Length: 362
Image 1 (cartoon, helix red, strand yellow):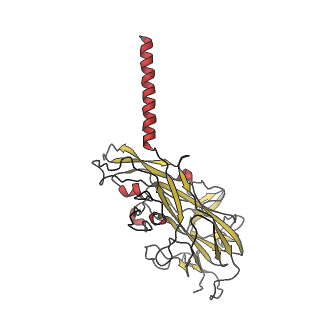
Image 2: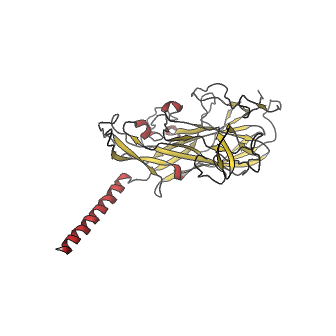
Image 3: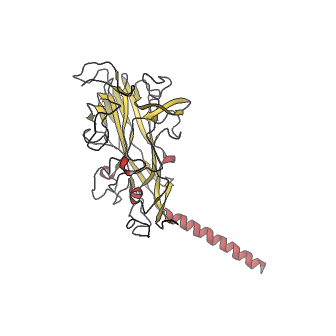
């Protein structure tokens, strides 16, 4: 009899383990893909979601773009870049380079599609998006002697490798409330785009820089990259947006950065961060490598219902071995020895913040 009870207990334990395995598999029985894109808006007057070369940078801002973002670049010219191969961009000494990083999740079907629990705002979507995204920019110019990241503030934000670091210029598309976001999907309400403005209620930081500029720790106590100086995983060092939880009561959080038809395209992607500004200091060649931080990047999956609002509950999942992150190709920055044509050489003038450079070439 005792033996029979033991057998029953063993079988019961095995059944529970099997059920748990099935449940775990059901939560995510698919491979998820994150594809990154360079923003390619061809008009700076429209938005900062592009790759631009400019003659000047105004840290205080000089108006508002059509997107609602602050205008910082002076004499900005859009650059066409490849999304799959290295692109060479020429920047004059004293000029500025501004980058934009867009993102899109595919391959993430919602197991709760069509469900309408009492606390949900409508039926649950077909595909789910990002819960968190972290990214930084690695530079081959380690200390930023040729190309330095521009600072966005003068207050020490954190320390990286024991050195003072300052907030970058990056505009993170999304904050504690949706009103902070300025840009929805690149294609608007196109058939394959979930055109919603991102919200990062959990964490929203622009990332840090150690600029090689007057008034800061100059080389060798500076860094050419954004959010990294040999410490890419330092909390707060890189550009990060994240949500800790989500339910069917906040549907836009669940589908941000996803495709309505599970189709990968630039039009379906949404701006993650733009206005990542670098200043060219001296002639030479620098390679920039924007990189997604896998440890700080997650997607949503359905996870039953909440006990309080009785809404469909979603859990954040890290990208694993079966998932794919399509990183961006490198940018090769060739820095020339002349100022932009048609403009006289001008001395540095500080803006009202006293630090961020504006080169008054226009």
